[in-house]
Amino acid sequence: MASRSEHLVDWLRDAYAMEQQVEAMLRAQASRLENYPDVRTRIEQHLEETLGQQALLESCLTRLGTGPSLVKGMTGEIVAFGQAVGGMAMSDEVVKAAMSGYVFEHTEIAAYTALIVAAHAAGDLETRRICKQILPQEGEMARWLLTRLPDLVAAYLARSADGRDDAQR
Ligand code: MG
Ligand code: FE
Image (cartoon, rainbow, N blue to C red; front, side, top):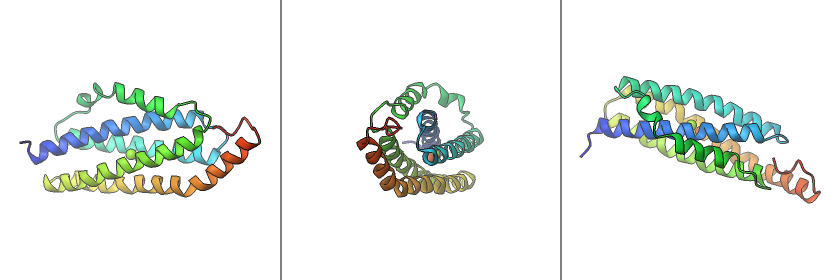
């Protein structure tokens, strides 16, 4: 059986890998979106938040004696997946980006919710504080995407029906 602090370190490393995947996905999406500037701006903003989250997770891992170097080896495939998902050239690319982003933010919400409990159980108040600081950023991104989705789909459908080549992204 693993100890509480072993679980905490494990899940922090998972979260770090998750944030690297998010980074690759957001970078790919931001670089491709051309005709939906507010979506691109929000993605770029969340990319900055994501880099900050990575730094905070690194600080937790370092404090617990597990450097991020131990994480980096395993993330190559994950990052490649994120780039593939984020850069997919689909005719409804912008819609899929918003939908998959919404799903992914909820993966992050679940991860930080679990980490808050795990950090508390391990008596690591600093990690708990950091995860509670990150969690609302994921919630706000998820909410923004869901709020934006109906108009985004409507705009996409209108452009698509007109045969406009700026519909897709
Ligand atoms: Mg995140
Ligand atoms: Fe996020």
